[in-house]
Length: 92
Image 1 (tube, helix red, strand yellow):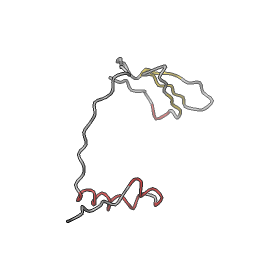
Image 2: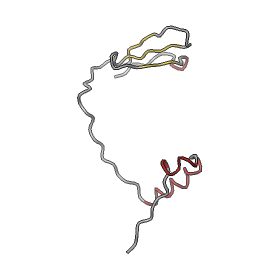
Image 3: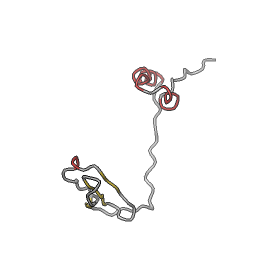
Image 4: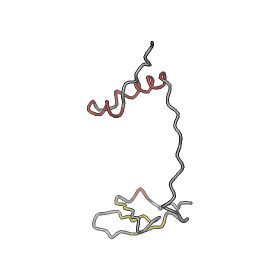
């Protein structure tokens, strides 16, 4: 279970460290001192890996729909990385 950080929208500077696991350090202005709050109130074993989630590929139709809806919002220099045009399956 996690605890909320009250008035989180008022703060502008945050950091987390492994040394203080489950603790967030925060402050409003750059010249202020950091305050700390414990936000994770349960123990956690960092040596245990999470379970692997198997993925299901999108259908070609859905890939094409997403491409049509999203491509115009991607900067040209990043389109071939983030929004590839779907390839039609080869027919033999």
